Image 1 (spheres, rainbow over the protein chains, first blue to last red):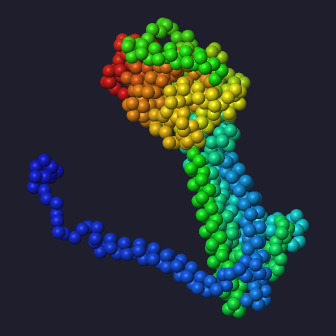
Image 2 (image 1 turned 90 degrees about the vertical axis):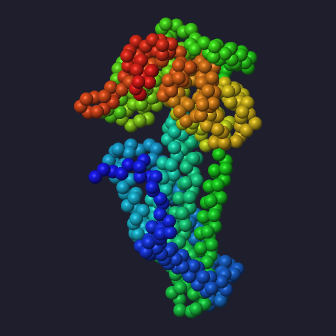
Image 3 (image 1 turned 45 degrees about the vertical axis):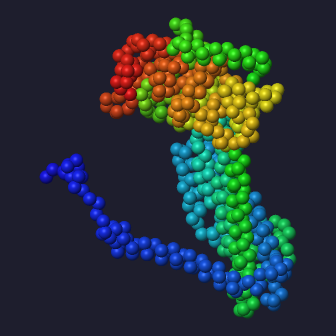
Length: 302
Length: 293
């Protein structure tokens, strides 16, 4: 059986019309419907969550939430220490984790010999660390603080230590990805001019990777901001009626305040929890917006 | 740039005459033997256990343009990268034999590859300006190498002028280099190389990603820069070699019967006129006339 010869056959060939498109078979329509349904479930859950939270907490989203200290009477209570505590802990976490994470990533990506077994072992372990449950980092922080003889472990530096360890692998991984995205030609262009590898890293590679590093870091800090488990372990679920004022100050954070209020019996505290949740989501949105602004500004400067 | 303004102008005046002469006759007069700035002797280059180039001996003449031509995988880029120790950056790369810069072994003990690369600049296949302003692209090299320049503004202007780019960019020095066209970016990369005052410029297929008009401008620029620098260019384009090069080296790849590895070797090295009009080796003639490669 010979293949048909197009030169002969095509003169009679016609494109079929009027039949149902093969893109519209029952299987493909069902498949498309499933995709839509999945999207709907994800989106509807998010909307329901936001709407119920706003409906419940909008009344208490006022100045008192920002200025008042927790109280046994919901109408007088506010989340001021929790908000300040979150800022203190996240700020300290950033100061601890960003330089360490970026430096580690620069070493692994730019200087370490990738074929050496030790570096491969470290690389594998960083991947593993990013998958470890956050509560383990809380235990690590407790252990470390106990080892150096700190009695009261609910201090800003303790919480920041746990959260910094938690997000360190994330920062390392995202920084490495940002560095890897910088074209090799740029490094070679710099080296070919007689720049050293350190100069090339500082002046060409790192600045080029800043937008990527900023994005990854801020996402990591957002995760830390919403984290409660390791801080609960450190004993952050406490009644704080003062402003945290230093690294050794006691603290509580917004997620923990939300947790505390949610487990209270009075409905008034549930409203407070919802209002604090709205605030937390708002802060996260502002952080991400800030990241975008920084990134765009860097891109424009080029 | 330590030369004064007037001498730069004088250079520009003579270079314009040279380009006219280059247009009038195909090849300029050059001595029978090159006065070597760079000299390879029995150079072998390995990547791990794979031998990329075998037994290359070549001399690159002072203030001449030398073209390296040949089919893909013949090792011409590998040789070019061994001329300023850019091969050091490839893990597992090894160069044996000797590569001499004004008679000094550049792979010898105590020679800093950083110093080698400052003296022997390189322009890459794809224009690779830094994500900085035009001005900072040029000033980068002098800054990182710690060059003493009286006025960075003048230095930048002179480098851009030599690379025939000044008139096009003088009003937008603070703007991003990424706003320039491909051909302008490549001339910026040439200016950037010039700014660290090398005496050799290596070019790895500098026109491969450019359109014919941009290519012509780069070629004209090369013939203008020939009086100031020793230039080595790798090119896939035989016409380009014939148009700009004083001497041409033809490489080919020898295939190992058992492993299938392709190892580059030098077939013929002579004045460009000789290579293109009366090659000594049959393989050169086959390549030049388009019978393979």
